[in-house]
Image (tube, rainbow, N blue to C red; front, side, top):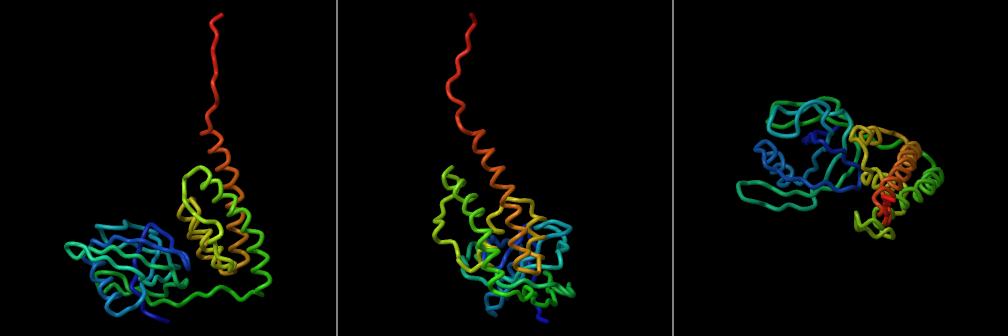
Length: 217
């Protein structure tokens, strides 16, 4: 069990993926000053009830992801631009509200053990769907990405794929909560299969219909 400062957001962070933050509230300036000076991680948790900023501290979901600070830019008034990278999943067992921000007593939540061969096979089935989806976005000039830079490790690839998804945030939280790597990749693959079909339809609609002429005769 460890103590972890918690940052409730309308965002789901996955292991190995980036999060970019602008810190302007006093309570979170204090929290990030602690994390920076003590070189400790913080926890990103999806908001279950409440607002992200300028109100009472929101109620988070129980499962989140640790984040390690990789870049800090100090701005006027003590504001900060922060970039972090997701670390490990965790479960909140209890919350301390004695400070201006939440501090959770959390346990790290590793995925259930599975044979590496099973993970590799599940990753092999997922990869072509993700590449199809991303290539559609690249060809439509909606994103810039080198597909050759995608990670080969199946779990790293799975979490990055979940990060790329443009789906409802609660669906991403459900993915974060999956405890088996093969199940995670199967769930992500099902979403991508639907998203590829949907994206193809959307992009086809945007294609010019061609010249059409109407006759009054």
